[in-house]
Length: 288
Ligand code: 13P
Image (cartoon, rainbow, N blue to C red; front, side, top):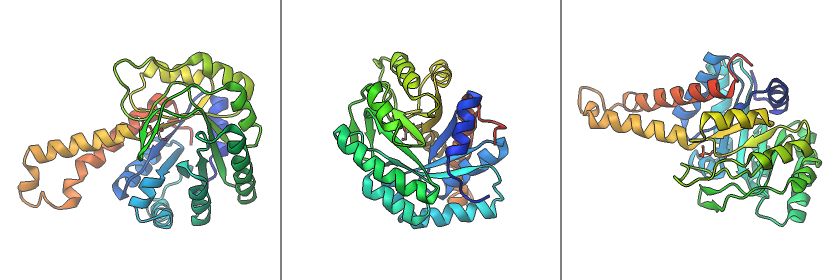
C-alpha cells in the first residue's frame, strides 16, 4: 500500500478511543522493524522523521525512497504515514516536495500570531496535496536534536485558535517532555488536556514524549482525546541495550558475529518488541 495521509487513521482512532503510535526512525533497521511489527499486528502506524534524523539518513528524498521501497518489497498492507517530526517552516516545505505524506510544523517557539500565519500557509499547501499536518502549541520539554524545550502547559484557547486553522492533528504541551522523565516529574496535566479537548472537539490530539509515561497515564490520556502518541527514545534505549549485550557477551568475536547483519539483529528484534508493547498499550492492534 502507498503512503497515506494520517487523517483517516487518526479520525478512526479518536472515535474508537485508541491511539496510533508514531515511531521515529533512524536507519534501515529501524524502519524495517517498525513496518514489520505494524504488519504483524495489523496496526496502522506513523513513521516519524526529525530533521536531524532526515539529515543523518542522507536527506528526505533518501528516506522517501527507502520507505516506499520497503512498503512494496515487504508487502506492507497496513496504513503507513511518513511524517516530519517537529519540522521547521523550511523543513516542512522540503518534506512536502520530497514525497512525505504528513508533516508537523512546530511553530510553538514563535509568538502565537506568527505560529498562526505560518501554520495557515502550510495548511493550505497540505490541503492542496492531500497531506496531513500537525501543529503544536506549548513547547514540549526536554532535548531533541539540540532543541531544548522547557515543557509547558498549552493555553487551551490558543489550541482552539490553531485547531480552527484546519490542521489534521494538534500537539498540546501538557507537562510532557522528550527523553527519559526525571525522578521529580510532576506527571501529565490532565486538567489541561481535558480543557484542550473540550475546546477542540473532534480534533485528534497528539502526545509527544511517549517514552516512559506510565501505562495508566497513557490510558487516561487516550480517554481524554489523545489519538497519536510519539515514541523515540524508548526504541533507542532498547536497541542500545540489546547491542551492548551482544558485544559484552563477545558474540561479535565468534565466527562471523562481526557481520552487521548479525551484529545489528538483536537491536532490530529489541525495537520490534518495544513497538509491539506500545501498540498493545495504545490499543491500535487489529485496527488497520
Ligand atoms: P520520546 O523520545 O520521549 O519518546 O519522544 C518522542 C517524540 O515526542 C517525538 O516527537
